Image 1: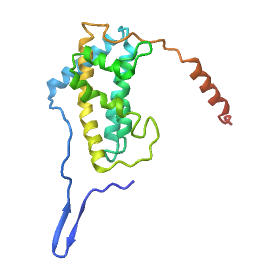
Image 2: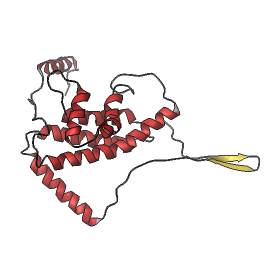
Image 3: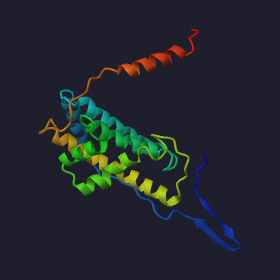
Image 4: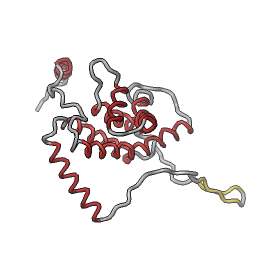
Length: 212
């Protein structure tokens, strides 16, 4: 799709330019020493995860965060992947804080975030919007509605800020796991569910046969 880079011209002798009124974004200030510390921290953390009982849950959460960050930078406009970005943020909470028995997913996430030291206002304002929006903006379920400019601005503002919220939360989680290994549920059975395995077999059965 075309991307508007500049709108300018003249009406009579009067020149005009259509400019963006406001742009929000986050950044981190760093230097060589800080970068070296982060690299050392990353290697140490990856090594410690290998023996952690919740290793797959944590690695999955980190992968969802990585995908969300990549998608937020990959589009030509903020709207390109906003739904997919929010979906991946929601998946971080879902994989880290699964509900027990027949519990509710959002309530389980609230409990898990509270154990990390987040206040009720922080939980509801910074993290719960991702879970509330995941099925409402054309990603979990198809939608044909068109959001107006104000609604899009709100969605873009949240996704811009959410990267910082979730980055900070994951760092806090990794630090707290050093002293409390029970913060995250142990890994589930890694085998593929039989229902899903049967579905994949049926898909394979209808694929065209290779001629090579």
